[in-house]
Image (cartoon, rainbow, N blue to C red; front, top):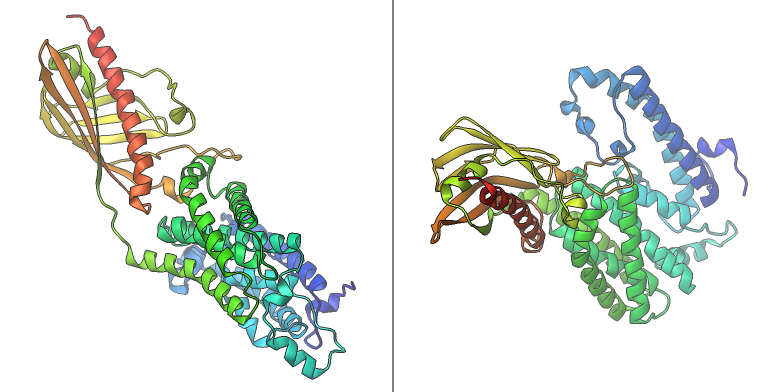
Length: 463
């Protein structure tokens, strides 16, 4: 393999995959470090690798504030020579393969250009001495014939690497660009992961169902590890998503296994269609902007004390002991204490959780029977398990929101009280009924932590 400086500016001839890959990575690292230097040192602005995938205020010219125009104009000026070099290298690389040079247009498509770059890094070059007729015949063969190795291990590796990369990128697009946690992410992506992995793995030879499922689950496990490594998700949310994702990956593998082997141009089209379906569906969900339903959780406890005593603990309870439940020790936000400012409707109750306070203006003050309130501020629902000091995935901000709550005190015979706590909430994660299993359980455990504490304190009060 010969590497020449002229590889990055020559417009004639062809370019093999090894120099194309090395120069591409080197130029990307150089460009990213220049951007970082300009952002931090010159303009004193934050910059991240994810900015190349998920543009922020630079997404459109009209959206750039005047204070940032000089910054982005500088970035554009720095980018121009890299764009020229990228086009030249891509055209020369395409000439050496079975692909048409017109595919250079993918160089300009965000996210897709990363997949396109990976494709050009692995696609083998045609022999320069190949007769023109043989070249035309080669270009009529399915593209995947050149990309997927014949061996069992090689085809498994190709399937896993391809779907892992696309799963991580697909998750990034859904959560950071489209700000959505919908059917496309939790249903479409796992199913397509299992299906695509199996179609690639079984492209050259029929594989057993067990092998297809095993390779697909391996791809899922590595995808989850990638989300942890790139600080896109924490372990807690991945564990909660697993019971939904694993069966869908297996279903995709079963469907893919029944279709193998599909060594034809139709397979190329099928895989491309599958890979485009999920981001397309995610975009459609984003444009539709479905409104989440309001959900309700009710919990109760019976207390050996009259309502008058219980009421005093409800409006503002003393600090709770540290939680012993695994759920809260694992990072789910838990209540610590509550205070109230004022008296009657319009008073403000603050229930302080481990991640911050709920601010609860009182709507109904019917002492000692009913305390009903709105919720105007919500803290994060959890602290994610992560290898980093802290991460802030999108779902921690505005995706699980309490809209109101109440405490209902019902007198019982024997100077006792039934204390019932209710929370009305919504979450913007689909399918709603699956995620409701988790959210209802979590909110119920939060209720019981408070209700049990109120019970202990109320029963311990002196007459």
